[in-house]
Length: 355
Ligand code: IPM
Ligand code: MN
Image (cartoon, rainbow, N blue to C red; front, side):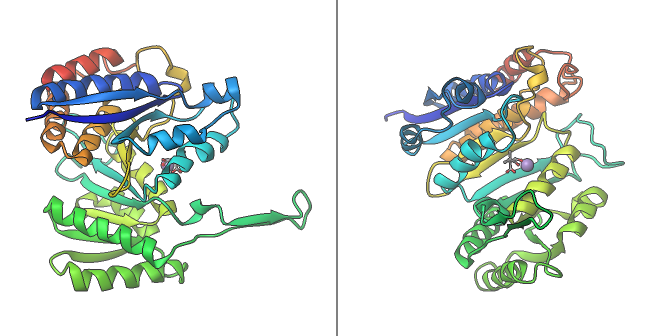
């Protein structure tokens, strides 16, 4: 039998991105050795440093190459000396759009021994998944500005959704709910009382698909403002939440802080039929760059998601279990940078060892 083999692109990116991705690779390699597959890691020099050096953000040749890979592992994008918006739009969002990664999968899961700001809530209460649509909404850049700088300046930025975009996202969310097989409940998060075009489309599509194709999945609806409230007060109500791109961006930061913050929150930009990209949700943390103090767990969790998506679910579960064990051991004191009681590389070694 020939061994399975994956080509994975590595974009360490800016700040602490390369450091955390290095630990993720270490842990994935440990799981690969255990379960019997090989990974060829292909490094790409992209991010703020390259932009400052050469003015290039994402050359077409690189984009074409990325399209041929099995997956992409991303550290962080964001450089203190580059104006906000340039790298985000030119690199991160461009990759999501060009590779048509139309799902942003963001589990909100409180691991054992991790502190949450939610009073009296524990790991059994905080365990759900947000399926954030990742290709439409306010992110399409539809809009414009006129009479800029005058008192009459007009600025328009529109939320854009097609039925097909909504349907493919809903289908993915229903499938995730089924596969998870926990509460079998999918909640649509919208704003049908104000965004009466866009979320009306979502709501109709949601119920039509659910009724016809997923009668076994319970359907709930929450306005986005109420969703925020319940994510804090009763997170145990949720199983899977599906929502548009903009609301998804906002509620997943709220979700991340309830699971212990950016040190642990991972996400996947997924094209179920193409090339996906996995990342820790936290930023480039320039203040901690090169100090070996940043928490690599979010990157490691993203690595586990990546393996699940390429089809190595056993290896993925192994990493998940190792994360849980590592945290349960009590050796990692805190998830915050510089407060873990261990260095970045030590945490990576510790988790790789558990694998
Ligand atoms: C995220 C980030 C990005 C987004 C930014 C950096 C463009 O906040 O991945 O959630 O808004 O999607
Ligand atoms: Mn965000």
